[in-house]
Amino acid sequence: MSKGKFAFGALLGAAAGVVAGFLTAPKSGKETRADLKAKAEELKSEGEKKAAEVKKQGEKLYDEGKKTVDDYRGRAERAVEAAKGEFVDDNKKKS
View 1 (spheres, rainbow, N blue to C red):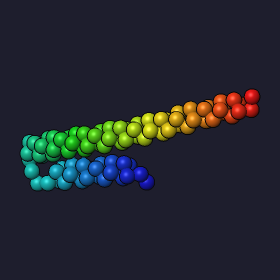
View 2: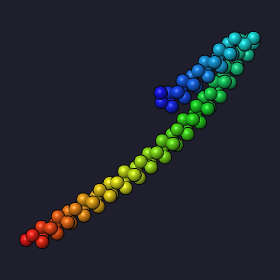
View 3: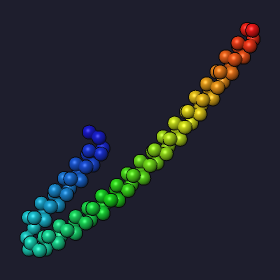
View 4: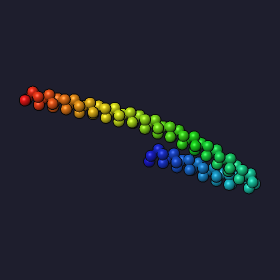
C-alpha cells in the first residue's frame, strides 16, 4: 500500500471517528453543530497545510529531477560531439 493511500485512509478514519464521537456526545444539537463546524475548519486548515507541504516537496523534486536531466543531456551532447570529432579525425587519417 502506498504511503499516500495509507495517509488518506488514516485521515478519513480519524475524521469519521471525530464525527461519530460528536454525534454520540450528550450535547444539544446546536452545540454539536458548532463543534463539528470548528473541527471541520481545523481539519481543513491542516489539510491545506499538508497540501502546501506536498506541493513544496513536489516542486523541489521536480527541480532536482530537471537539474539531473539537464546534466545528463549535457553529458550526452558532449559525448556525441566528442565521438563526431573522433570519427572525423579517423576519416582524415585514412584519406
